[in-house]
Image 1 (cartoon, rainbow, N blue to C red):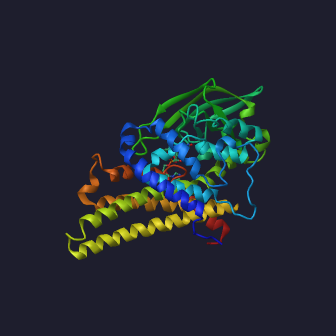
Image 2: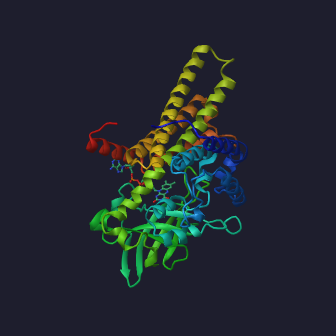
Image 3: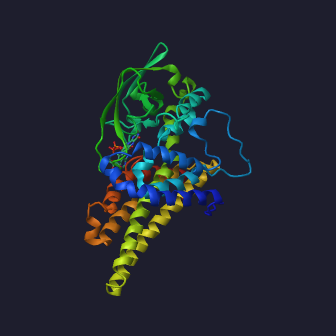
Amino acid sequence: MIDFTLSKKQKDVQDGIRSLGKYVIRPMSLSMDRNKEVPEQFLRNFMRLAKGFRSDDVVDPSEEGAAPRERDPNKPSETNRTSAIAAEELAWADAAMLLSVPGPGLGGPPIRATGTPEQKARFFGVFKDMDKGPLKWGAYALTEPGAGSDVAGIRTSCRKEGNEWVLNGRKCYITNGARASWNVVFATVDPSLGRAGHRAFVVEKGTPGFEIGKIEDKMGLRANETAELVFEDCRVPEENLLGGEAAYVSKEGFMTAMKTFDNTRPLVAAMAVGIGRAAYEYARDFVKDNYVLSRPVPRYAAIAERLARVGRRLEAARSLVYRATYMADAGIPNAKEASMSKAAAGQAATFACIEAIEICGAHGSLATEHALLEKWFRDIKVYDIFEGTGNIQRVVISKRLMTGLKAF
Ligand SMILES: Cc1cc2nc3c(=O)[nH]c(=O)nc-3n(C[C@H](O)[C@H](O)[C@H](O)COP(=O)(O)OP(=O)(O)OC[C@H]3O[C@@H](n4cnc5c(N)ncnc54)[C@H](O)[C@@H]3O)c2cc1C
């Protein structure tokens, strides 16, 4: 039975990050966007604070591969839902900052899902002692110039030579890909095999034949790095084949990528809700401050009704996020629900950002120093593109509904 009540820990996480977001992150948001970077010192301070917000059953990335933390088997896991709550609050403050937080990032889930114990210890071990040394990132490289939604069509090739794999190809739009200590890179032994030909490798920074291409100049999320990766006869040791040879006897190579999305789509959806809520609250406060006393009541009522529509759609999207994360925490397969949350949140939040600008009139269109609405409008678009576009979520949902022939 899904319970939407937040636990004490979740409430503490929500309250703590909300005030950090309001008083520390939000005030820096526009300057980070302009300078296209999140200051390193800020990220360090944030990481120190974030340790206090971590839910009891969320493992510190640097500890992965060590003995699992003791947990009360009767107490349900809260990891995914707590992460979604934190993601909404951080994205409310600044989504690009959230994507820039050091750690394994999107590269973490495939290693967690299919890495051998040695691989987990090695690749998560990279993040140990970050508070004393340089900041470190991991990344996830699947998309190619000719293969975004159509992931089965990747062309980056891999062939085994002795005890190495040789990679050739190009990956694009990779979040934190240039600064990452390692990238989880998907390649194919034979494109004609489709998904069954896929293999996932952990390619470490500095591996010969691995170069960084261009860093993208984006419309939104400008403070976060998006990079192109180039592989030219890049030689990767066989120990870096994720899960080892045994993991690829069936279609596991491809399934690894998909498992990642089941866990991360609701988190991306939660971020979208956070941005949409930021725009909604801005417009609501603007209307309260500027319209109530000075405008005729019918006009105010019409605007309030538009705000109510925005609020309803955001709440509905958040409910889908909570359902998908509840299922993930309970170990229930949630591919359809994860896609539903992402499809709904991308649209609801985009609607919120557009409505907020229109409701604020000319003020909403300003791109001056105080104009966060314009930034959120730019930031939100990608939430209907990355981690599977809105159309792809609808394809996933309809396939599951039609093949299962069970509506809900
Ligand atoms: C800021 C940013 C960060 C990113 N980070 C990463 C990352 O870290 N790692 C990574 O691997 N990738 C990343 N990506 C890439 C992202 O996942 C892809 O852009 C996305 O999957 C869409 O692929 P595409 O751009 O090739 O568009 P296409 O797949 O070419 O889609 C173009 C249009 O066609 C529609 N379409 C395609 N197929 C269908 C279909 N079957 N039915 C209906 N409509 C369809 C799409 O919905 C879309 O509207 C990132 C992208 C951005 C912009």
